[in-house]
Image (tube, rainbow over all chains, first blue to last red; front, side, top):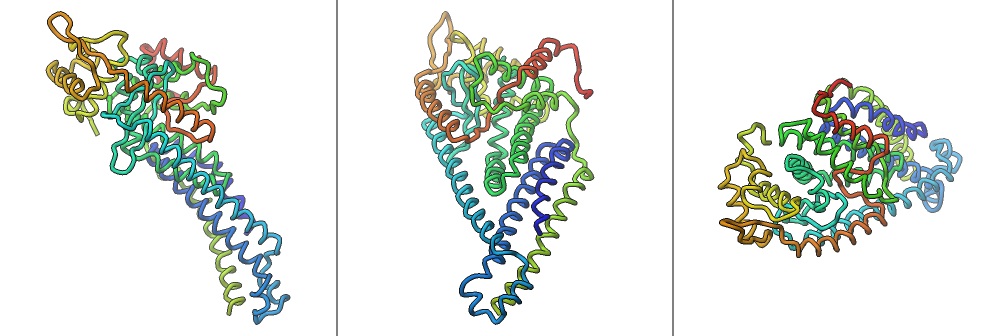
Length: 295
Length: 131
């Protein structure tokens, strides 16, 4: 059972590899599915440990037809493990709630930014280059928010790529995948690397869409490089989470499009399958114990 | 998905408006209809571009001034400054709370910047694609 804790780590390690052999939309969906599976598995695992560990206590024990010794034999989960699991569950609830609150709050603020806009494109005056896709409130269209500094850094063709890129984020509702990733990380911090992969693949997805829209991958790569370099000139913000994302995206655009090869998924699916098997095994044991205790 | 060249002319009107607005914003001075036409692509008809400019003017997004025998267009800036204020609040909030906004580019490592600069410099010669 405790071995199961290692499986998400394995899955997360193997995934970037699989992600590189998938077209971005497939990669995003796979990564989100894994994040969901690991997140749900983590929750269920903790619920079982907490339930089994704490069932030694209190009224259940007194009214149970079984003796304490019998219970201990049936159920090898020590009380302390149950307590730890319960505390972890409480921590997770707080983390998920705060992640959801942060996302909702940011969305409200961004909707305030585009309030009163009369077109798809919303420009704000700022010499440094910014570009964001802002999902609309319910019933509202999404907006593309760009600084005039960004527009000036690019030529007309490159601006088309930028617009197509942000439009792709909106059209494919990429914020939903991000929300899945954020909640999964709140449940199990091991998934941080997976979330970063999801973010990267979402950008790749929008890049590929933009390249298709302008029918020119090289142009798409150039726009991206130009925009990234424009961002370098003013001192980068101190809190910038620096990543090598842009360079990787440019390289990907300049190489042949990725064709999805289902076989590359096998290792990931094997690890996931093992995880599900362990959880299923534990679940059966758990239900047997629960049945014995309550019955 | 827009596939070929022919589809460009049939793009959604909203997308074309965005492109024209982007061109107006990028220009250092007001643009004539012909200049906008050149910027957003000569595969569109001049008339189409003029129609879009007129619509943008009517919506209050672009300002129009007489110049010679025609008009020149510039973006209406009032809204942009209000937006900038709100945007700064939003960006600060996002940074303080560690929330990630979906953004076109993130920051670059110096060596990555050098590699990209080199690519832009001789981008025309190399074909790339063999990694």
